[in-house]
Amino acid sequence: MGKTLKRSAAFAALARALTAGARGGPALGARLAALPRMIRATARGEYDGGLRLALMTAATAYIVSPVDLLPEIPLAVFGLADDAVLVAWLAGAVLAETERFLGWEARRRSVIPGHVVP
Image (cartoon, rainbow, N blue to C red):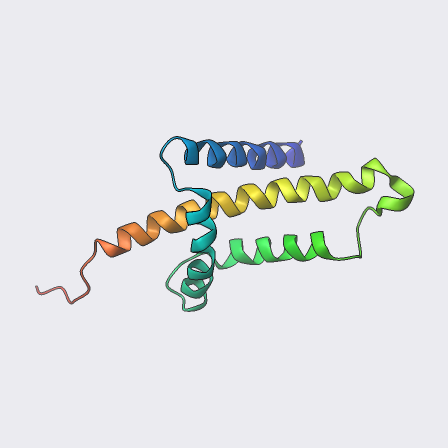
């Protein structure tokens, strides 16, 4: 049951992220353009996306890797199912995380750097 809830949450996040772009949220191009900035900000320690980026990187590596937990050849449809679920999760995770990052960037621009004077 726990895995089913995680999958449904990933699909729900994907659906929310896709419909948000149509309703005034960030466009897909803006989200994809934010990926390099998000990676740089995370590497510098400015943004707290390290674990999420690591999970997305691991999912991408699994998808493109020829080594598979459920091989396609002997298991046919079941072998493709694990890849399909992972692709859906990855798409939802990238869309949700880039939206969160773009919000973080917008809030950060509104702050004037300096020191608080007591």
